[in-house]
Length: 168
Image (cartoon, rainbow, N blue to C red; front, side):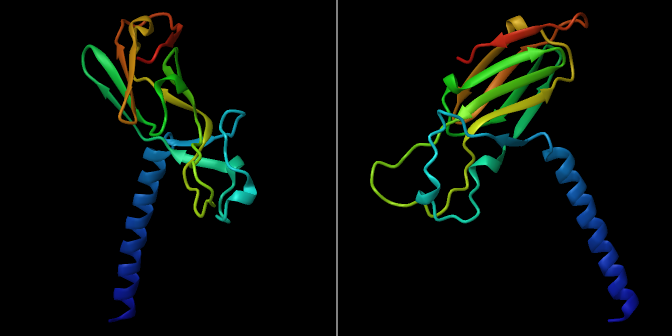
């Protein structure tokens, strides 16, 4: 193999890697969510955890989401496993959907140690930009199988408002 071939292959690799990294950064940036331990999070004490990379004050997780649009509505789905519907607070303000919640740690009923603790626990906030005006007062939310689904009927452009949405 000649030096020119190596350069060409390296250039192709770097271009592919850069393109993939840019795409990942662009598509996942909104999904990367910070979790902050609160009073109700109930994390184990630091001496109960052997995982040297666990820092509860710096927990981040991906809350993957989808936004679907048709002529009548927007549907926002956010993957948030390990929670209950009561753990969510949803608000619509102008062209943004705000989802807040708290994921609580569940202790094992036996004695032992945590060897690895990779899940994020604590309170979080996720903002989802809405591509069209919606009638927030008619929004409906449900939580099943670890997925929060919010149905938002569209409305004509006008004055933005703020509405709280109950999760069924």
